[in-house]
Image 1: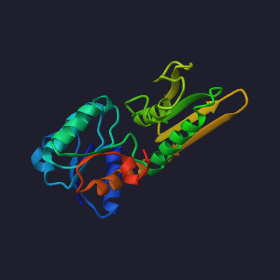
Image 2 (image 1 turned 180 degrees about the horizontal axis):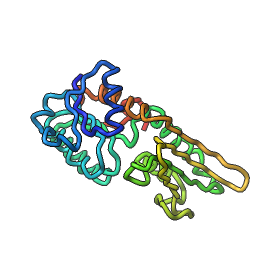
Image 3 (image 1 turned 180 degrees about the vertical axis):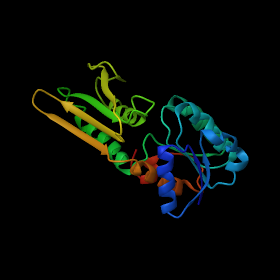
Image 4 (image 1 turned 90 degrees about the vertical axis):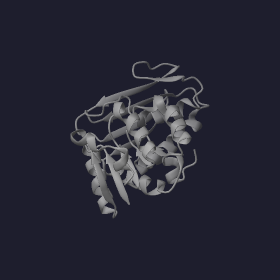
Length: 239
């Protein structure tokens, strides 16, 4: 499989190692120094593209991949306010998109665990729920896309919480304590607290390898498909 790698920072370099170890080829590597090579003509030579850049660049990169007819796996977060627009464009142009707030297999299992726990806790309003997420200082968006995904699954079933907040912790706001610390790949925790006890689930990433491996697995899975997918489809996790 020939992969176009859009974004060649720390994550891009990790994806490159995983790609080569699984017997694939990095056909094209795009970074700030060679943006002139990011063309539809070059993309058409790839079997699939993997996009890990910045929120500001992601939207244009996705559209370019769709225009080139190359399936694109998107790991950039912070652009989801445009998700409907992107889905509509992908479907209109018979494209292929696989997006996720986090490609780690462990994190996606954690998503499922969080959703199930939220459903179990919904009838018990004596528990207040809060979240904490910790990432490295280069992480541009806060809260992280992973934290927002976790929060949205809680909000979907919680009897009083209406939205997440980086500042408020009350009946209507799900507080997310977003921290940025050097050299922390990612930690997410959800805690339900009452006067009697606490219930807490935590996922801690030890390095970027899990994210990179998941992205390459997603690229392998999406090859030959049309439409819009998430990691739930790749891992066959019930939505």
